[in-house]
Image 1 (cartoon, rainbow, N blue to C red):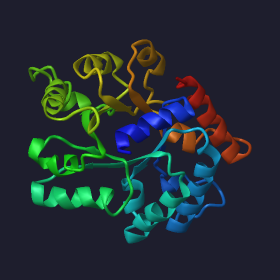
Image 2: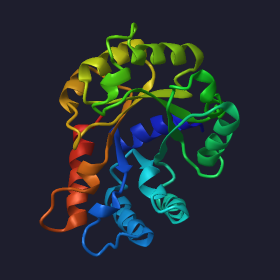
Image 3: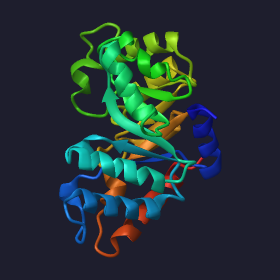
Image 4: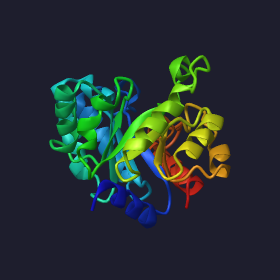
Length: 262
């Protein structure tokens, strides 16, 4: 079963489109969890245990682990076996490079670690990502329209014609099928996200920006943005909480799984 098939099976099993971002800012760990790799690991195990029956997918942003050097990478290696094998696992690495380097970046997430997908930066051109697409059984999410305010500098800057995100989508959809390619399309600019869907009607979108970043989930749902995975990170793993912390985590995950029901 390739990654695309696995994702669609997960949709059917869990009947929602929730991806939880395991993006643990160690400064925000709750009481009882030291700001160390071991504290990070223990915290993530509790997050996984509280949400595993609700989410379709988990996304692991390497920045929050690499800050601890090799010990942080060990945390990734140790938590993955604790995640049910039917979960769609995304390596949020935003990689790209010349071919010789890109080959090793791809091997790191697809050979050394059992990820189903990775996030990729297309700004160095098609050849910089080719090694990732050589893994024809994986689903690669190319950054097209990100959720950060600076996306206006390039991705939807009207000084470029056509806008860069449109050209990224056009170029990649000409070369790769929906079984091997998806796009990162942020929720904070729903009007552009809707336009991106028109350009790539069958391709899976990974949609960040829901929750703490203020993305308009309701507008996207009305626009029939599927197929998509909606990623929620901070709003689930760092909830406003005055009682049992991981009960609050679960309640948030349950709330989003219901909002994202299919």
